Image 1 (cartoon, rainbow, N blue to C red):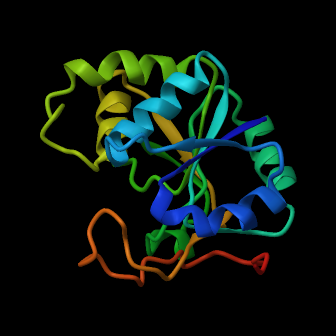
Image 2 (cartoon, rainbow, N blue to C red; image 1 turned 120 degrees about the vertical axis):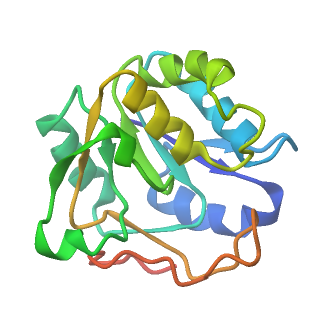
Length: 186
C-alpha cells in the first residue's frame, strides 16, 4: 500500500519518526504554495493508485500498516477515515458515514482512481481558491457531489500530535482522537 505523507520544511522534525516506522512512505514536500497546494501535489503523485494520505504531525498506532491493510481489505472500494475526534466514536464505533460528513485530513485512504478524480474536481469546486486549508472540505464536497460514503474506522489508527498548527497558530493543540490506542513513541 502506498502511503503519501504531506509535509513542509517547518515540520521536517517529524519526518525521521515517520520514515523510521513507515520506510516505504513517500514524502510530498510543500513547494511553498501552502497546505491545499501540497494536497494537490499528493493527489497528483497518487495518480490512479489506491493510497493512504497522511499528514506529518501524526503519531502512529503499533503495527499501523498491518492494521490499516486489514481495514482496507474489508472496504477496498470505499474511502476510509483513520482519524476522528467525534464523541460518537465512543458510542457507535466504526461506521459508514455520508460523504458530506468527511472531516479531518490526518490520515485517510482513497481507493484506486479517487485521488485523480478529486484532483479533476478541485478546479470546479465552489470554494476553489477561497479555502486555502480545507482539504477535508474539498474531499467532503467531492464525496457529496458523487454520492459517495466512507468508512470511519474506530479506533483511530493515528493521533494528532499536541503541537501548534503551521496553518493557524490559534487552532487548539488539543485535537486528539478519543479512541486512539497503542502509540509508537518517538
